[in-house]
Amino acid sequence: MRASPLPALVLASASPRRLDLLRQVGREPAEIDPADIDESPLARELPRAYALRMATAKLAAVMPRHPGAIVLAADSAVVCGRRILPKTETIDEARTCLGLLSGRRHRVLGGLAVAGPDAKVKSRLVETIVRFKRLETAEIDAYLESGEWRGKAGGYAIQGRAAAFVAFLSGSYSNVVGLPLFETEQLLKAAAS
Image 1 (cartoon, rainbow, N blue to C red):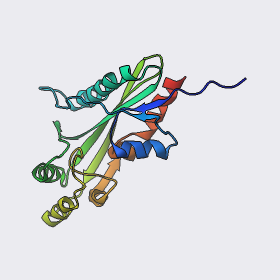
Image 2 (cartoon, helix red, strand yellow):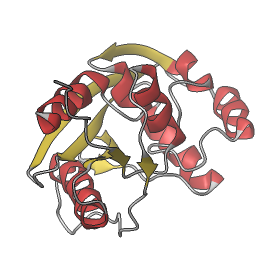
Image 3 (cartoon, rainbow, N blue to C red):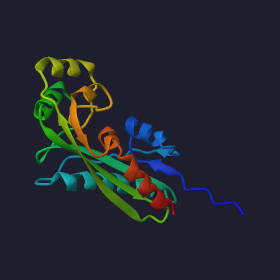
Image 4 (spheres, rainbow, N blue to C red):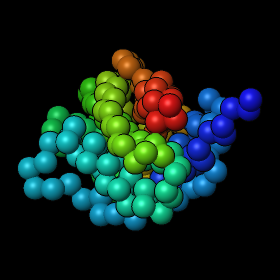
């Protein structure tokens, strides 16, 4: 008797980092279908609620287009105090973010949401603590010249040159890159069963 094939996996994200991380653990999405949603925080929305809301909203936007599939959605929020830092689009935004993070601890919140073929939604929030060393102006300028900050939450990519800024990390490194692999794998296994 043959085992029934696993449902197709759909990644509700255009992030090349999330795709690379999934491939790293042997998961190849059958399709990539990014959600087009408003990612603005709500008034007085706390960061943890925001990260989970973003992941579940992305899932809700993509799930109806893929009945019978396993759909994975994720979002990352870089948080300094209670402030959700933007996905930087301008050099001034990136400079501001790096200045805020310099010499301080911050949190990276990874919201995950998965729906299986039965359309049951499971979600999880993963928190990683990161502390940057105190950054000199020349270091910030050199990083900004690299362009790695473009479109990155908090204005940095830990898997690139900003790795040299990290003095301390507690929790999931892959969460800071864009997808907490351990928790993702647990949710995907539960959705397939």
